[in-house]
Image (cartoon, rainbow, N blue to C red; front, top):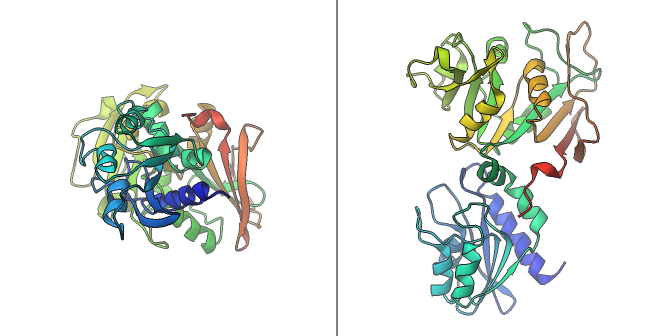
Length: 357
């Protein structure tokens, strides 16, 4: 590992600390180096708050004049909730800047680099590019495609079943896996379930066995028939959105939840239009926790980007709900690990879902 890579890795690790707090902004970290020593570092801590570059400068223990900045995403060059970071770097005497990837936002893409160069700052692009792309894959897809990065979570028995039937709640995996799922919830903006899952499981969809913020809760309910005494409506622990048919749309908000109208397709909500509507709410990463019917529909339309497959080491007898998803060569397995008595496989659809910047 080179010294430049070491400092960029540190910037990426800092950026990760913003997970769950900065969306729909990207996760960004910045490291300032002078005479081969880190003199300041920072990250974007919360949406609307100071950017990573500003934090690194404020946290510097000596003047950043003639230092080098390592940033995992191109600095902004426009006035928004915060002043342009390009100008900030210039005003504080940064002489050189290593940028991992360009910002996909059309308002910035390449313009931040142009501004830095016009200020006389030497710029390098592409250091640790693949890692930075993966870190902000949700933001990249949200900006470039207008839809969130879709993560499907499945819990299956050893013999490949998701439950006994459509009317019975069944715990498939161990408590260790459940805790791991709660940790996963802290890393996404929202969780999506279908109407049947809401009725049968009556889930809270909150973070209870991990440290982090509760994601937005979203339910597909074409005909607006869900009873309002369900946990997702009455516990007030997180905001709830219900996607319903335009034909059933009346009030956009009640004291229980917010309703968003979506176009129907063959008697059901259009999943593609649903994802666009969800993205319009500022959701860049979406976790699906649903039954086999919705899973199959998402698969048929190639709308799943990433998979967390939890498998029990026990068979489920007299079960009807077979897992419709089969791993194929369309999927790239990132890792497989044991969680207690269960096994977890994480996989992604191959690179067509990631934008090359």
